[in-house]
Amino acid sequence: MDLSPPSPGPDPRVELPGGLTLRAFEGEADLPEFFRVIDESVKHLRPWMPWAARHGREETAAFLGGRAELWARGEQYSYAVVLDGAIVGSCGLHRLDDTPDGTIEIGYWLHPSVTGRGLATRAARALVEQAFRLPGVTAVEIVHDAANHASAGIPARLGFDGTLRRPQEPTAPAETGEDRVWRLERP
Image 1 (cartoon, helix red, strand yellow):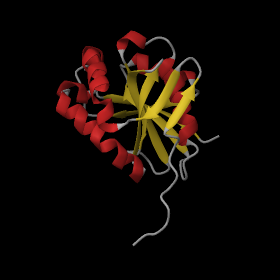
Image 2 (cartoon, helix red, strand yellow):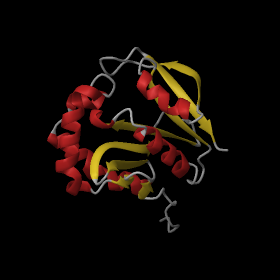
Image 3 (tube, one colour):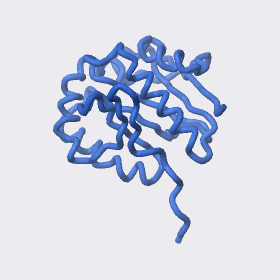
């Protein structure tokens, strides 16, 4: 039996200027609002996010129900993106099977009514800071389909190197089968 304390995780709440907050999901309490935000965003998300095609209340409840355990295990740190008190999207830090050792991946999406305002860039910048506070994290990656130019702007603005490309089986309608991998090494 391992009696060592769990690894420290990122801050569960990150307050940013301009009414922007990243906060750990609160399980079932977030279900009505988060489901509505996804529901209103499905058309915007479906071309790039395979899970959007399976969107439903049960899927959203299952997603929210698993967040605390994944956080506690250090596998995924999922945040509600909150603007002026309202959930407007989601972002997080994820340790995926295909992510190299010492690397953690950032993911993000926003409701279409708030895109183009720099919120995802600000959220990603805050996640980079949180990631590099985690033990053993030496690099952060942002991965998206090569045709998703809106997603490419965020790591480019944050100084990530985006030269790596790799084949990936398309899983969403707009995907081309080529991922662009943006990488930022620990300073």
